[in-house]
Image 1 (cartoon, rainbow, N blue to C red):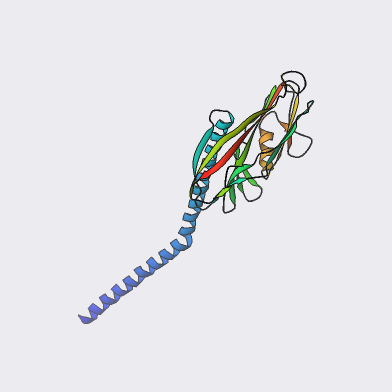
Image 2 (spheres, rainbow, N blue to C red):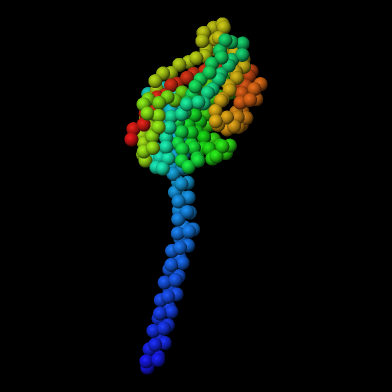
Length: 250
């Protein structure tokens, strides 16, 4: 009976050892393989949320531009990232057969997290991975039809601090000024019908994506210099600018 009992005890000990070993190996595999995947999913979700939030910001800024509102507020989740009012992007608009040649410093709003940025810039939203991998999330508001060109410029400026790293932030956009830069006169020189050809040049870190937009947008054609596009054969043109001040409320 004692020998039989010892064999049972040995079997129990072996079973316990095997079970405990399986548990330890499983925990190790989860630690090595599961956690990075969970972290990757979390990273993707954060970026998707930031992208959706920036699209809402773009929609609200469009309402400011179109005079459907004077103030708009959005809440963005930026946990682990940062939100910044940026300088630098510039848009130049030139009209043939007129004196109109204007450069606009449009600025923008940018979310950044671990090498990926989501940027609002003159009505458009871009998602950038690395240096050259740029996707257009939301198209800009520039129109070139067979007979009319409309260039809407949205200039973003910082009301106070230009950067925040809080987990949640309310982006408050206020329309400071709205101005119609062209036509200048009602009739004759620099009037609505004076120009039959319009050139738009975008100087931006996202110029490659802007080029793709103009190439796919319909009636725009490549201009005489890089990052310049032409809208020609038009009967009328409008160039308007809205200055939007941005404040962060945490």
